[in-house]
Length: 141
Image (tube, rainbow, N blue to C red; front, side):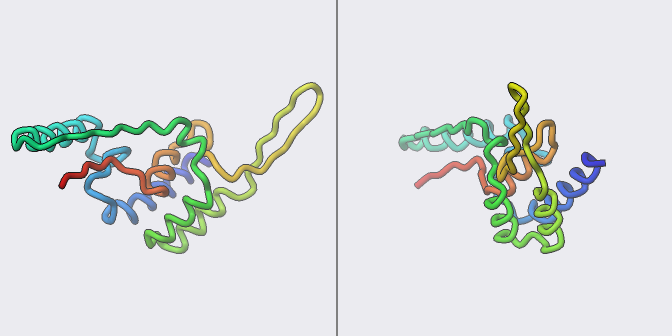
């Protein structure tokens, strides 16, 4: 049941946010792929090289991105991007009441997390990329 609810939430968020997202967002976007991003980068770079301009590329890999997706930032970004209030409340409720339990050496430790996507969750890419506004960009003068 949780996966079905998650899919409904993610589909509604995508429906609400996709029209307003940057056209230069490639990660986890319907109809876009890594190949599309590479093609666009190469096309842009070749154009600048042809005009004898300097081309610089910076690549960033965020280690543990989904494990560190901070829930308050996700909720803030959804509000900032005018995600419907009812949907934001569902997401907020989705994050509530979670706990991490570690049992070691006959002891149990319980913590309430404020970040991270659930293991095996389909929501990770949408919450991380849609909620934190990360995207693939290229700049030129």
